[in-house]
Picture 1 (cartoon, rainbow, N blue to C red):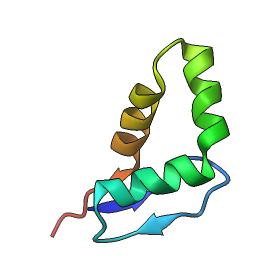
Picture 2 (tube, one colour):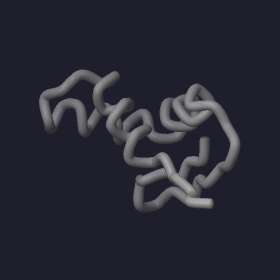
Picture 3 (tube, rainbow, N blue to C red):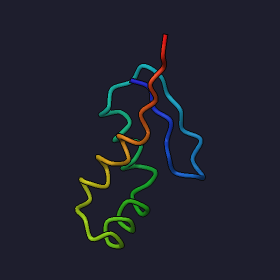
Length: 62
């Protein structure tokens, strides 16, 4: 899959990686932001991760 991180100050872009690799990026680099969103929106951390992964997927039409 192709990912382009949705966090505004992040320049992470990778092609042909597994979702698990992108999750590692989120957990390593955006842990505090994910916790903040979880608390603010009152949803579990894994749901914030799922939404972020979904919004960061890039689909290329060929």
